[in-house]
Image (cartoon, rainbow, N blue to C red):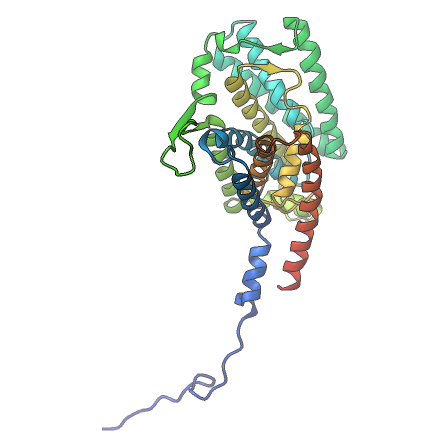
Length: 371
């Protein structure tokens, strides 16, 4: 019987030198991959801010106190995510805040003053919002004007309409007693419902305070918005188009990306978010004012930047924008619980914006250097 021995392949024997490691899977590459995630900095900041107010105040972490900042954060998260998508696509929308008040006034006037059906009123407000988003997009793409100029014009138009037209129709600048309108209860089941969770078993909940954590519809809508936006950005072809048109619009058009449709869709998405927040606010507070949402467009942009979005486009995430909104909501309510002057919130927003831009630039440079 003969035995055949297979010769060892070069480089596989026991004395062969170890193969060089692939730098793409090294620890530096993994660290760079983590640092390049837009939401990392916002997540760390959110944890630090939560811990600070939870340990420095007695009302922040108890169910009743948390209900307030969770609702505020949820409303801002919906708009921040939509604005973040638009910023990733390389554009801004300064009419986003006024859109929330406009849609609320349209629905409120149609239901309380004209007595129209609740769903017809809600749908009319949605159609008007989407039409304005479409007009914004077309004007930006057809004229070549910067989007902040076009949407700044839309912002002033909406402010004038909210004030003048509302006063012309109902002789006042706000819709009140909305809960008395026919059909309010039906709309409230979708936009104004709430869920209470008993957290009295937590050791830090005092016996003399309400043990219930109240979650409003805005929170559940915000979760849906974040999930859908993340899926679109990470798993779909339109998500690739959004990053492409924001990072290199000319090159994107040359390789066949539908730039016009993508940007029109982003402006309409922002308008849709404005309508949604307008409905959530109207059916929770049962009032709509001409000043609702004015000035909040800058907060949405700050939340997106804090969440990792670049002002130059082509980079960012929906989760990061939602975390930016969570930071804003926690700080806004934490300042109140701490007994500070609430005007300090604006100073904090300015510092937060500058800090986020500097940190984002540093993190990106650091990630590139250790790639």
